[in-house]
Amino acid sequence: MHNAMNPISTTLFCLSLSLSYLSGTAYAAASYRQYANIFFDPSDIVAGNYGGGTDAAQETIVAWADQLAAEGPWSVVNKTFTPTGADPHDYTSFAPYWWPDCSKVGNTTELTQEQIWAQCPYHQQDGQFNPDYLTAKVNNSGAINALADAVMYNSLAWTLTNTSKYAETATSFIKTWFLDPDTHMNPNLNYAQMNRGPDGQKGARTGILDMRGICKILSGILILRKTKSTAWTSDIDTQMRNWTTTYIGWLTTADLPLQEKAAPNNHGSFYFNQLAAFQILIDDFDGAKKTLQEYFNGIYQNQVEANGEQPEEAKRTLPYHYRAYNGVAMSINARLAKYVGLDMWTTPTKQGGTIQKAADYIIDTQTPPKDENSSPLDMYPFVAMVASTLGDAKSKYAGFLKNEDPEYPAQAWFFWEQPLSDSGIHLSTTGISNSTKSKSTGSADMTQKGNRASSLAERGLTGYLWLSGLIGLVGFGHELLF
Image 1: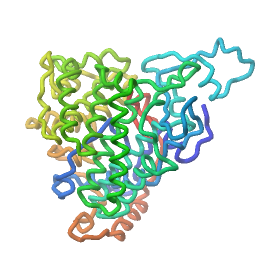
Image 2 (image 1 turned 90 degrees about the horizontal axis):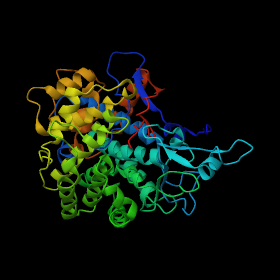
Image 3 (image 1 turned 45 degrees about the horizontal axis):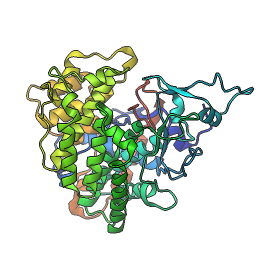
Image 4 (image 1 turned 45 degrees about the vertical axis):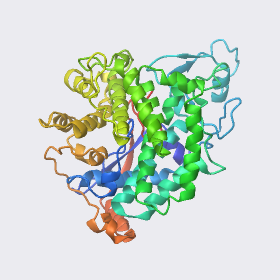
């Protein structure tokens, strides 16, 4: 495996940066982790109407915004390998479960990575992760996932601190990835999740999944729009709408995405996440409604059985992970539907299953096997979405979260998944002052933010790298999601 990596490449590899205090008793920001997908209606957040007891989650959000801001920007052109027939602006990634067989290549010397990718036939081994997927030479997947988180967390940090640099960072990162002439991404995924080898110099339909993070980017853009951030100019907004319109044209007509749309499992669910999010981005609410109705009347109808089992995910090599993963995708589709005026949360499948039953099934009947010991991380945001949307009068979901993570109120998702009980857990934080949060000041409190950062440093905030297991980690601390 290629080992000469620059700092950005390193963080885009299969490791995540975990933050902890070496001294002091105040709670540090939760360790950075990427969630499968996120979308929330930013209206209450922008208005400052978020629940009490979310201070620790707010601190985590700001810490992650700072962490990701230091890593970016990212660009699709930052790779040294370009597939045959592509240009540097074409998004490129490798299929994660495909492995080379070089036994009949006839080489007399050791092959380079580039020679292996071009000359050796590849075959699929489901669930067996090939680490060359994360090679620094072609990690557009890690980059787009890091970008999505950076945009969302920096937009949130802008609302929490009223510090303009966060809005400027989110906007700048979007411009670099999507819009700037020298660094933009062409509006397609024709080379996503290539199988590699002499017959694999083109993308696969599974590669459409790589753009699932647009839901996070949409959340960030909605915040920038609703707060009337001066960083998010009308010119940038117009350019982003134009790029999106072109991409939607490709997503709804090209063969690869149409194959993915028909997938009965999480791949199909995330396709509908993606299309609806892009439609909302350009204010095509009617189009988004049709998209989400097609999902809930279509592939969703066979995704959950009466007892909550998800048959398409149960058959996979890593079923616990995939049950939670598709649970997130189903929930995001319901949340997007709610945003455009449809209530789909309790929609039953043909077998009488629901999104809530899918969550209950995993909580009540499943224990992750040892080779999926990091899979519970996929469950928490799913459970939180169900609880905050459908209620948790008996604290079943809050109890599960407390048992799994005694400091769950410090997780970023606890901030936007309200109302959700904190189970009586009270975490001491360095805090974000009320004056800094208040939009009534009309200006950023840069001094307060600087003092807060210094306070964290003085308490011995440090980073250490930790391997989250086979499931974790596409890009900058990102989980394996395919």
